[in-house]
Image (cartoon, rainbow, N blue to C red):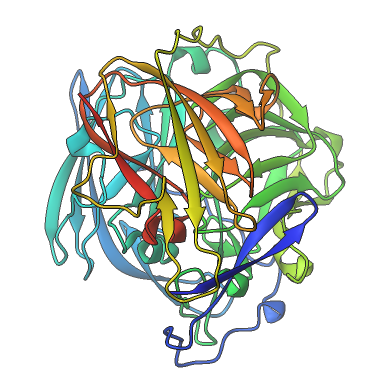
Length: 479
């Protein structure tokens, strides 16, 4: 295990983990990220997966977890763990009220458990850490009833102690759930609605990924849809980008290099009630941001960069601070709109239960450092929280660490953020439906959720994958 220290940038602290002496290293020397050509590769679009069978109520899909080799860095090939051999993984487009069934076949050499992040699903289809698909050809069929409103969801591995490396090596995919509320708004659609997976990586000189848990300070190559620092050609009109932070540890503070306007229209659980006009959108691992960018303000032939302002002192800003280049190559008609009102959220139910959740990890710098929720590391056989079916609860979640940031993810439910550090949340991205929320050192958030729909045992945890693998996870039972 790695020893943890931190570095700070303004109000943000980012984890830097120093490898223990016995930690595995690549046989080849590291690839120098400064030598990677920037904005020479086109950002690919994730393939849209088609069902192999559709009935009046259900769409049936088949996915295979398999090894594949892709060009991520120009001129080099990289072995990956993928859905269907694709990197980024494919997109499933689903509809509220219409069931999706996915058969997953695991042809990898390690077990997996596929979690639909943000999905309101029965326990046996949640992809819990110990509900494994056997390596070497094991199968499992997941059923997603889609009884929730539109949302920006995604797939990733959740096999305990394996999820960190499996995700780092590519096991992510996208699941976009829509409904009539979203469709009738006239937002940018079709080829102007673009899912983008963002993450960081570390490479050996031969192109292989170099993985060591918590190896944050060496992951200095930024990927957008599976390419290192790509470009994306756009028309001079509005685009909708569905950004998902699929990194193990890295935070992104996304801005345009000219500091012009971003219009955030949605987050984890779908659209906000109204557009949030800003010049900065932050997403921690697991979080999603739904953003409209209007390129009509740029002349054809111009370029503008999407940059990341979350690089910490000591990190190479010319690497970490650069994400994606947009090239305005043509004009196009645009009848899309961003309405002043997007959706109505249901009123908050009266809460009958209040709980305190404490996130902490050791900060001694020892290789034996562990991570805890309420003083305990994860135990698959222990129920940490008993919840009555149908109950509405308020959870006060605190990061008690002095230096290390965390975030917090709950399975089964979308929640509402009521307060941050004692102040009511009344504007911006955190006013929407959320399933993952950031907690910087010393921060406290107050969340409200209603536990209905399904009974069973689900987990809640830090969604910085390496922290979860170190024990920062717990079980809740709804019964």
